[in-house]
Image 1 (tube, helix red, strand yellow):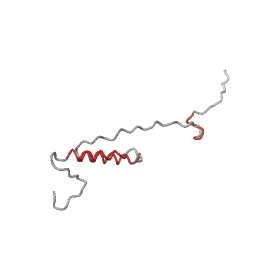
Image 2 (cartoon, one colour):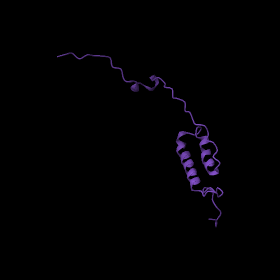
Image 3 (cartoon, helix red, strand yellow):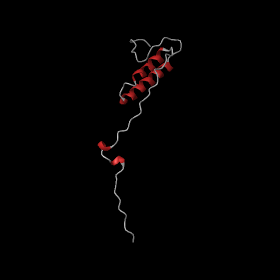
Image 4 (cartoon, rainbow, N blue to C red):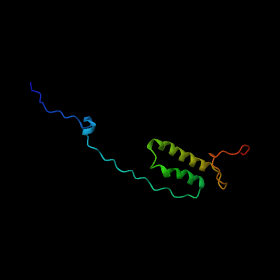
Amino acid sequence: MTEPQHSEFSPPESAAPEAERPERERPAVQWPDAPSATGDPLVDRALSLLDGVAESPVPEHGELYAAVHDGLLEALNAEPGLPATPESIPRPEGDS
């Protein structure tokens, strides 16, 4: 029979206490430049919501992107050549 070899056990780095782990640097996020104006007021309004994405907390990004999506969908559904009337603005009663 062979004798078991004993060696010092060293836990993996992930098992080390938080204070003993070396701090890893996170790469800086590089945000794209602000979108250029398109000339379409509804599209420009929707895209302007992206201006604050870098400063907003990550948990709010989903709502922000949903608002951009809804604004772009509204622009796609608008009748070409008619003045932009955002659906999000309530219309007076009796108007259709």
